[in-house]
Length: 267
Image (cartoon, rainbow, N blue to C red; front, top):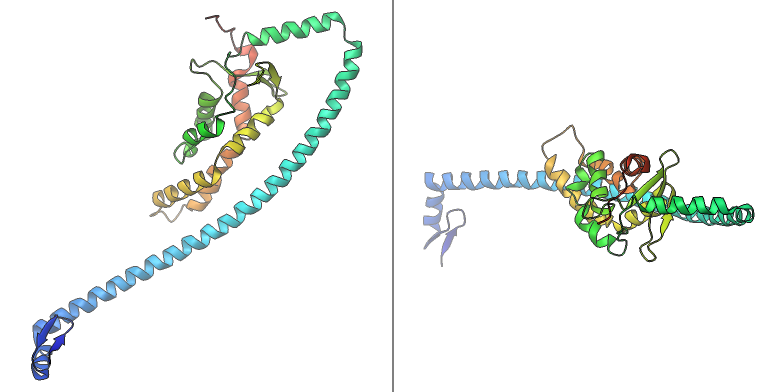
């Protein structure tokens, strides 16, 4: 029968030899080293387990907040749709009434204005058909961390300009934030006050979950050793850019306002 010392991994033919071995300095040294190593790794494991549980808790809290925001956002979208329908009905009534008293001169002026606007806008319409695919390459964990102006210019450059840098969007009234751009199907100029329709397509085109997860891991890694910065607060701050709010609209208006533009040259 063999007697084994588990600490030193040595076999002995008798129990007496095993007992004698356990009294040696070599055995005691190895045993102390093993116990020290085990204690150290148990502490490290506990620290990592605590950190993991903290991150998991914060992530769950953030997910709850995001779910609430998404629910509120859906309700707001429904209200906007309903108001847009009412607004459209009023618009049709107003247009119908106005058309009865419109003179030939007014019609000609509108036509001239329409043709004039065509001289300032790219012949290429906004590519809504491939918008979602394009946004996956444009809006990333890195680009969303740009400051507001740089981020908005990033979207304008890659979505609202053609390859030659010509504007696909035209701001016709900077005070009222009226915009026009070409319909992708007909090529006709359409109006989009405050870019409501365009911004809705941008919001729906971004895969928020993918961007959010990539950004969260990046922020946790970046601020791992910082106690004064909460990566989850940073995450919420950066995700607000995906609403494409007033700063985005104002920046598009400044860059595309018709009175600051020169007519496009005919190629």
